[in-house]
Image 1: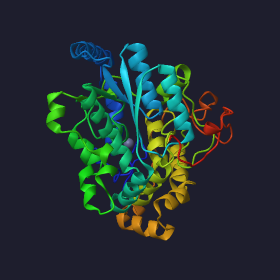
Image 2: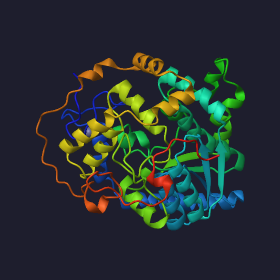
Image 3: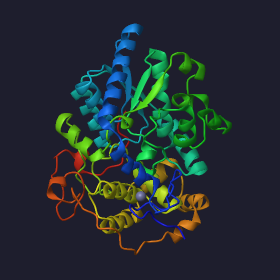
Image 4: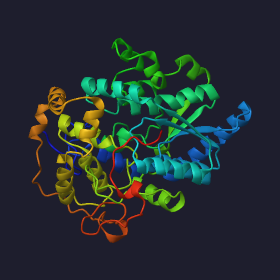
Amino acid sequence: MIKKCNNCLYPQNAKPTIQFDEKGICSGCNYNNSRKLINWNKREKMFQKLVNEIKKKRKELGNYHDCIIPVSGGKDSTYQVWLLVKKYNLKPLLVSFNHVFNTHAGEKNLENLVKASGLDLIRYSAGLSSVQKISRLMVQKVGDITWHYHAGVRTFPFQVACDQRIPFIIYGEHGYSELVGMLNLNYIVEHTYWSRKEHDMRGWEAENLLKFKNIKASDIRPYVYPDLNEIKRQNIRGIYLSNYFKWDGKKQSEIVIKNMNFKTLTYKRDRTPNLYAKIEDHANDVHDYLKYLKFGYGRGTDDCSLEIRHNRLSRSEGEKLADNYDRTIPRSLNFYLEFLKIKKNEFYSMIDKLSEKKFSKINTSKRNHKNQQIKDYIFSNKNRNLYFNPKNPPKKHRIDAFDKHSTSFYGY
Ligand SMILES: [Zn+2]
């Protein structure tokens, strides 16, 4: 029988590598709790020191840009830009890997970000036929329709960094830690080649794809990591801001809505009540549905668990909500099956082979959980535009990109 965390909704088989302590609390909750023990003023001072180093290095190298921010048009990258430009006066070069599965909202928000920041942007748009081939292959091999995103986002900025001799790449949160607490906040972890390959790319290096006849060298170009000696020689580092600032997606979204013209969705989404996170890509729903089919939980569980940890949702309400969203078949499924040329029954039997059967025994806990004090309830009127509540739906922007669900390929 698979247990759930005694605080949030994560099951014991959550990926990657969730751990439960003797009290039945998961490593994601413990990671979140450890934030209270961190001296954030001290961390901010450490970051200021790093900023000084970044600026000094730019002068030494005679560069115009002092760092790279990988951007997608999502709330995190928009927040990174706001923080680094408006508060720290850095001169970043924006680098975007266009994976092709953008929503119209994502494209609009990227446009807003570039306009609001006034910064330069380098964008690599992967070819549709390469994306189709790689996506189809990786669904078959590892059940991941978005393998090429992770590969592109963790590789293309390093290619630009090497070419342009810009030694600092600044990412936002350390994603897996935020969800399942893979790491400890006491260690200031940076990007590594190992975690890129093992976690982001599920153990597959781009060159491994060449053993399949239909994949050519030209298809994998944005995913080929630069020579490791060159990265070492130029001392190129990938830094996570969540080591230096108390990370909370909701608060950051409020900042970028106010200051960067970032816009949220207003329609009901298929896989989560959240209207501000991961709104820039429409394959995320299918990607997440695959996770549900393989492991028995999806984004409903991820997002509701985060809200429970931040005391914005009770565990019992979160459990019902997560269950409903996790079971919902996304509207975009047929669109993607058509694009990948996979028949529906073929798709389900393929995923069945990758699925962990034991999750059918995930224990829906009936225990009483300690009375949680809800401080900033997600469905209160003031959060109306941030979480979808059918009883009090968000105010429309009167812009189709944000008000209407659609699945087309935007961004070419
Ligand atoms: Zn937990």
